[in-house]
Amino acid sequence: MWTFGPAETTPSGWQVFKDMAKVRFSCQRCSHGWTSMYGMVVFYYHWDTASNQGNVRFLLTGQKCNHCNPDGFETPMWYPEEAQKVMTNLYHEVANRVYQLQTPPLIRDRRHGRPRHQHNSSMCQACRQGLCKTSKVLQAVSSSS
Image (tube, rainbow, N blue to C red; front, side):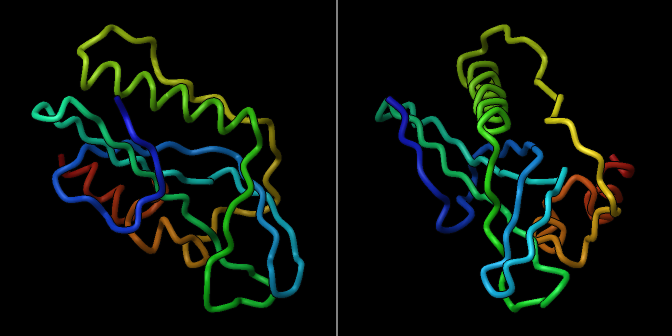
């Protein structure tokens, strides 16, 4: 059996799976809306052989509004097909890593979009936490491996 829920903290020693999707944001303060091709979800998962139970926790990272620049990050709204894609990818990741099953390649397609601006790392929660695939921190780590 598996449990699934939001990550209150970053679980120590768990496997990590990150995926990106096209998401929509709407500022709660000024009502400005925008779309991002860099919506990030981080899944933490762990299989406990003693209890024969698995746990999955997720973190949906946000972005700041570039019009009013509030203190907090806005929560993303996910398109249904993008949510389905990342859940399918998580399923394949767990099937491969936990159960050693052969799985198809991860789905990398995203909903069509024509970004009008470059990804703004200073407004991205995932970049600030070193989680975003576009962040310089991750690129430096990847290139040194």
